[in-house]
View 1: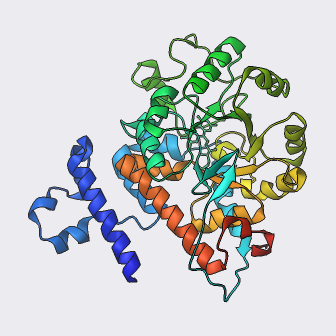
View 2: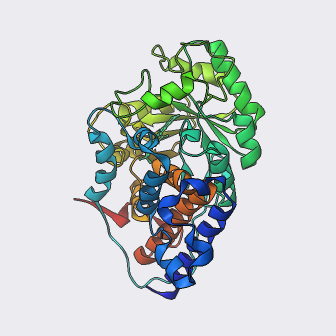
Length: 395
Ligand SMILES: Cc1cc2nc3c(=O)[nH]c(=O)nc-3n(C[C@H](O)[C@H](O)[C@H](O)COP(=O)(O)O)c2cc1C
């Protein structure tokens, strides 16, 4: 363990103790023996405090705090979870070809995307119902993303309304759209997002119906039905019993969005070159290679395995983003090397949220940012635009 790592760990430990001291959730953490914080010697506290070395440590902590229903909803997926696994395992099929003897003192992770400069290429994917993971839900996530200068995408089915999340986040929030089958309702959703200052509309196209998720959702549905978890953006506009998904959705919707939406239109859920070509043809401003974190069709294909055909079809005409199974800085590096312009994460920041609230999301982002910077140094790339296909080889 070098000094830098020990320092990082100490900061994590202090942040955690400070947060627990301030948080109303302290009661929920007996497993951490927090009563010892004030009475036990410093050395023993260090031994007992959880150490978050990577996002998997945050996952382990979130399991202790959130309870089975929430963790199953969060970690669950379609059918037998083979696509969930394929997303993560897909990254093992690519290897990094690192270069040597390059001065890597100064590293820049900045990127330009949709007219914005982003400090990091790691973006927080839209995740619904975040109050299920922590009482502060999307507000905690928004504050964390803002404090760490990461781009955030708000889900249509956020518990807090997009306007409140925008206040917690600041400017340039992005909004994820599930179009309802009633365009009047969809239009109201778009207006709410635009009034909140959102600059990008990320249209999710992999959800004509919900995927077959056998391990989750029962408690979530009960909480929604009981009014304990509200859908902040759809409250009062979506009639009871009506779905927030639309089976009739076709490419015509992109034309409709061009005339009914001022935000840039990014299509989330593209996994083939054929649809990538259509996305360009219909004037999309960008695409996200995504299979909804393996929660929709059990396709058995990891998104990283779909990236090459999409990037090669699009040929730089519009940005290509990717999500699904990104858990390490090396995963981010490989996706960028294959040709992604940015990389999104879903579950990892939610593990932080469930484990610790806002400081946990910050920790997840700090961990992945630190891993990426270290990996760039080790691979000999000092800026994101240097990370090209020469850095990666397929098995
Ligand atoms: C609990 C959960 C809720 C999600 N909710 C949404 C959503 O409301 N809208 C959406 O487009 N995608 C949603 N997604 C998919 C994510 O945006 C993203 O595609 C996926 O989580 C990426 O995979 P990863 O979790 O392995 O990083 C959700 C994913 C999870 C895990």
